[in-house]
Length: 340
Image (cartoon, helix red, strand yellow):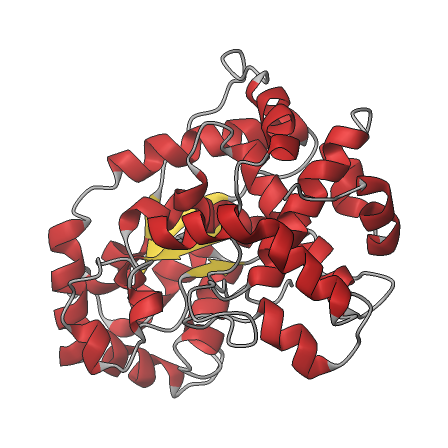
């Protein structure tokens, strides 16, 4: 069973000269003839709107309908214990009747009574997935309430959206929970589809690069976001990664300077964990560069490297890119050199 994929909101992509042609080739993909129709399953409603069932009957119903996803949700996400334990039913009953969770569910339902718009958007992404990976399993999509734990949960066959993590930047609970502003700004329904496909990519193509240095991490994340490019070739980059306009403008203006900084400081092949985290972790900004610079700047550069690599190597298929563990080779063959 694949581990839960907790999606960190990472990276940024700019429309540089190198990336434009590559993105245009992705836009050439036609999915009109692909036979696929998504129907999102409302796990959240099956849990919190089924109070007429006793806990034991409801658990049996959920296990039958959702299989292994229910086990992961109950055990790993909500920490209810082993559902084979006789005490589990009491834990589940207390969970579904919890006043705070019921309040969250009620508030969530006001925004997500139906998810038709998400369904339509994700349907296009999954049709592209089927185009590129015709022999791979297409995950079923479910919605849930995670108690503000995980935005996206990926198992072997199910991709679940925690709707309570996408209630909008004005949702009053987020500041009360101590969630920083730079994260709250991205906790909006418009980011759901991209987060879903990123989550699935990271669970399908785990980070198993040959080297554990900064450039390898940059390229890995770059590949994951290039996957999102392929799934949503017409979607704005800002909706894929959640950077605001000023952050995107800063990156566009300072791309060459950022690259020069990495070269000058000899950071690319650093295996120092502090260096890797400094340029790939989430935060309000990248402190060692500028307070105006967005965090995760290394991941953004990695995305540009991968886009350049795919432009330089037009015969490389998406699946080949994602399975290639040699990040150093991808970097060298990208011939990435941002213009000043």
